[in-house]
Length: 207
Image (tube, rainbow, N blue to C red):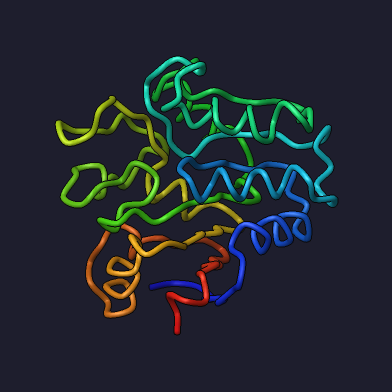
């Protein structure tokens, strides 16, 4: 497992403080309950110059933004609608090919936020999926029969290209996956690399 592990009492607060400290001009957002808590905290934080900040997404379900399953929809409701960033690049609006070209045309993303699934997945990179071994593209289509919607996701080369990767981990359902990462098991999240990688992990999982 690559990067620095920080045991924190409140993952959402720690994420907001780190993001404010870094003041990224480009940020790629995630989805899920932990991400929602993080973005609510970030909406109340100071330090990010949102009118100069471009927002992307690290993965997305192919659903309308109005859907409860949309990562972008969640991020807009709890964060983006309140901070007015310079630009928001929708994955569903562009599709995998155009999003790949967009990311490729940009400098390395300042901050990529990721989570950890109970099965060890991160973004929409699931155990056993062919997308795990993608070595060239930055953005690909993803998903399988075990998940409700087709998806679009960053690949590990896109994640590795970023300046800072922040992985937030909390909740009892993540304990087994976290322990497996520590043991060195080849879970998808084990492959996360970047110029810098910081794991913000709930203290009760680290103890």
